[in-house]
Image (tube, rainbow, N blue to C red; front, side):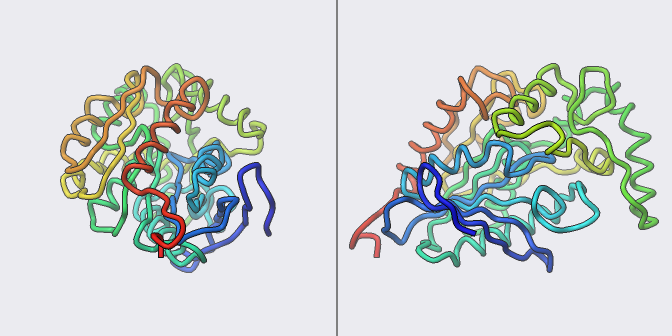
Length: 313
């Protein structure tokens, strides 16, 4: 299906990851030209593409980039069951499949593909680049970089509240039973993965500004990830990231702490670091969205510019 946005044509497409169909929305520039660099975009912890990713994609397309925005298996409009199961290995494979799909798009320059990830997805793009995925650049917005740091940020009491659900879900997984779910966000003191004071209002604003209602977006995940997140630390791969990397950090991030994100960026050979006076959920919406997207566009214009005409051939 093809439709027009304010920026250019948009098509709904699919690609396959380990035999499962993943939903992909492709934003194209209004003007022909090429070959074009491609920006591939994936969301964060339990997130789906409908949550504000198209807002970024429209800006990239307006600047002349091809853009692929996708949902992970089991989330959003992608196929896969059981639903809402966040598995790091599977999501990294979904990323690899999405990047391969992007390289094969008509009008794409397969040598100039950018991986854009936010929050948990920001950690994924660091991992992929560090593991040798051929990328022209990465954009890591408020990235998850350290499992132990994320667990410490959660707090002991919150972890203890999550432990029984995690154990039940691990048993259910082993016995091939339906998952045991936990809320992705909750009020401070509740049983949820993210319980910082800004978590519930932050997600609610993303949902509202995406034109969705609360019931449109499942706000839970299989609880097993809470027992495993401590083992996933993309910072371990940061030293092997050789492509240009934009690392955008929230100074008051209660989910992915600033200090460890800065340490991860310092290990990268060609990192550009931007720090914003906000929390983890703020870059997606105003007043911080305008600044974060402007910095992303400036970074891409410097390191992966759009080249039209004979020079692009």
